Image (cartoon, rainbow, N blue to C red; front, side, top):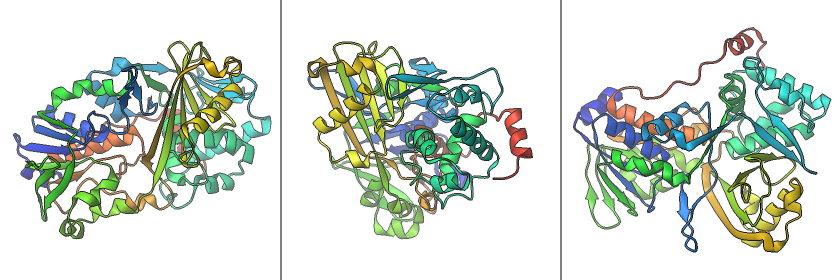
Length: 464
């Protein structure tokens, strides 16, 4: 398919990228650097898609829709940031703080041991887990290191954990805490395969894979430099129709204008695809119908600014709470709470949401418990009802490939068959895959190489 695409798009060919999220931007930047002319159409008036910021009309402040982070194992997302020249805007943390009720904290940090043992000493010192739970965790991690996850796409992660005798309390206080944040679904719902990938690649394979990178600036500022890689940028412009059958002839925009290009990267949200392609395309190219079977999982971001600091920590994972993460900014005065898999929150009012978030914070941070209602100076509640696709059992079959029968149409988005869950890394990979198909070469950055001891553990351990 790469060679066929190369015949469609010559060295001076023009590519239309339809969608300005991470997937579309990754494709656009790679294509421009390879000498292609790039036109990018984005329905919003800013770049970044779901991983972006908005401007508070009252203060003019840029506020992220939701806190997004990068891990050390996100090799393609980091490469995308390098191409944009914004790596220095990412602050790296080699400690994760876990907050229990009553203000007790545990710290996950690396030891001098090689992967996959580098995090084990700090986990074994956690006060949040009993001795029996810790040993159950060790046994399960050993099983994760050896398991072939690829066949496990049709059972839930909870079913797999039950096969490995994981205590209910540990599922709630460890496995769910990690997986809800990483996959935007609880263990009861998420397929075992993507959940196991989180631990294999993010925790066990390489000692740097789990490191947490948090942007030091509003997310939208990460994309400011992307403009120089786009020859024709149309913000606030929606694609209303794509015309053609065996190949794409043109894209019709909501202002009545049309775009013609040699190739098209369809990088819009998957729920919009059926609304812009015609029936002839749907019949010809099964990729266009596949995403219709995918479901969504929502994320809630809550920004609270107080008149005094709540904590001197940069962030915390909350145990036994509805809020999974909180990120502290402005010297602890601003708390950005993240609630993933937030279906139960979507019908709540802003007041109800804020009250629940404040209760979770107060139970774990003494400073928050002492604050009166008047201490809250600003608040923002952002509901992303269609934040990610839901990686439930069976969903993998509906994730389409980049290329298909319509030879000049290439799909990009975290919902595509990237081999990753619904993450910014998955989005960047899909963008590189689309650009690579057009250019006729592989642009994907390899994963971090597994540590020798991890490879040995997989080789000698009995298959789980």
